[in-house]
Length: 601
Image 1 (cartoon, helix red, strand yellow):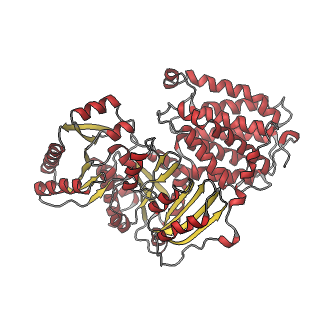
Image 2 (image 1 turned 45 degrees about the vertical axis):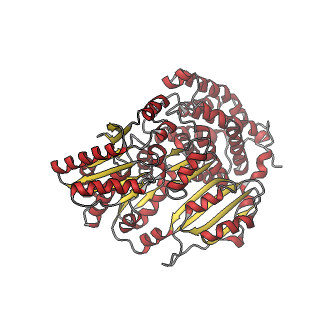
Image 3 (image 1 turned 90 degrees about the vertical axis):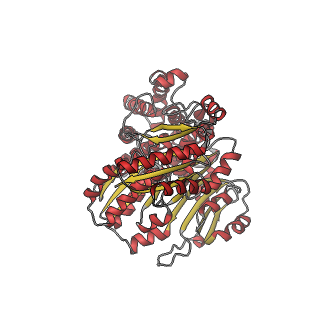
């Protein structure tokens, strides 16, 4: 057993890794508690899950060496890629700040540690568009200040951490009165509490209070052997579209049974690891079916799906000098996405212990089945800043510039995360990140029109300038079939949902000029809702001719076709497309929902 830092004045790479692993262990023990006290910024009960997932990914995929700087850099890089949720993204940025300050250090001494903590808290504050005191940021700052205050009197990192502990605990307690939401609920901030638990675990290990029996779970024993190296396609022949990877945790996983269950889904299948944790790799056209099979085997700890066909097209058959990027809430048919080589960043859906990539590792049918049978209603989270950074960096290799158009900021933090990633790529190609103030098919029409402008040869600045007019010309009208999913997802109160059900209320929903959802009308039957929507669209067309319109639906093609037929009869021309909404939107819209989206000339 390696000696802990208890008898040392510095930390090497292995000691640093083991200390962080001890911190993760403490957060895991408190995960359910952190979820329960999660009331800010929204009471969605997933802070503990998000912090645990972020740290787990970072430490499970990190490369550990004797060098503290190299080890911290690997951990930070992995954390940014695997970050989830608000708390996870801030935590990952904090680790990135530590890495930045430790980069050249073989061993970290007390003075170096103090500087790294200050740099980390600065980077965490910089990552948040509107920093709020009373959150995780507050305790990060308090910890860095306490370390600085105790630096002269402490003789080692171990003593330094011990002396800074009371100030950290005091700072956490004060968050209870710093934000109205926390004060009303009588709790401390969940993200701040998670950070305190993490530091407490690391301090206990460094001071020799725990021997960390969990070190046997070190990921080195589960990495691919030399005989399992993956050969990626480099030619133009891509038999299966998606390179699908996952890390699965479970009890006594039978690799051969798993192999037999996955072989029908594609080729290049590799399964490596032990009976408790295995990594799979497969090229497949059906990543959703792959992951549906995997969840019956164990918990999906990590996943990645890359579109190999699009990657090849971009590298060898790029059509345009400007890349168009959007996210999975953009409901466009696959043929249009492929035609304009549009890059789609997936949002995440969390159901119990499992996580899915929207439209990739879960489809609408699987989502509704999951929602119906799961004891906890699924939740969603935005893509990580690391994923955006990786995609922007990749596209910068092949394109002159990038235009990213995302779901409205009033609905999701996706656009904010994308903007942070673009800003972090200092010196990279020109990247414009735009808040569409729309969602689903109306976002789709905006993205499509921008792609058409790029295809017509317009410049980056011309397209960015015109997108604002596309946003004003787009409209979304949603006929909600049931309020059940709005209630389950927390968008409306149960009492209002019960009243709506009793009255058979069918609201019509749109978005306002700022991108916030609004009720646009209501009826007491779906047929009346459809008739009302058709009249609205016809009136809009009469006032200012429509360039195009389309219909989207919540896993009910017949309802979509019915609305499309009524619109075509009234307007005199067919819809551009009829498309199913993304699973992440079905979280709230529900099965049977239909919508018409339109774009004026």
